[in-house]
Length: 204
Image (cartoon, rainbow, N blue to C red):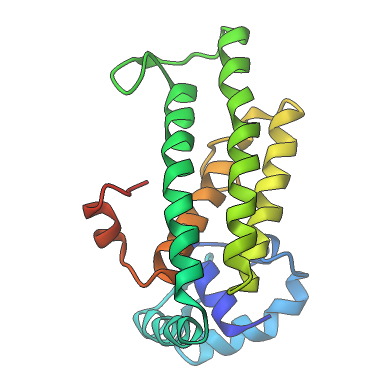
């Protein structure tokens, strides 16, 4: 497991327990212990009940990500990011419809209308089918992004099995949580900041 992968995972999570970090990286907790301890001892991570990235850690991560970007075909990532922006619009609308009836200005969805919920969730299969090839394309340049296909697929299977909290629940690798992290990865890989993406109308 690379230093970049650990620092990026902690940054994206904000605060994360060691066990949850291991789960999101698909690693045995014991495997990560040594690396996490070294990163904490060097001041790149702040250890405690949860892990978080330090200012020095953010600086180090920025350097590692810049080095990573220097070795990729930026045109492939730009194309993948542009394709993602289109499907992202549909996914955001899906999540809004799951949470509210009648659009952004509607009323909270109390999930007492099984037909309505089923219609919303049915759209997720199409969104998933569209985003996986985009991830595959981006992963030709950044292989570590393949993990996002796996995480989204796991969340989708849980949702389709009736565990609908896996659509948008925070603090777990729900479909929405993983999607947000993928979005952040693509923004960074394209050499943009979140603020620059927001100015172009591409905000989560």
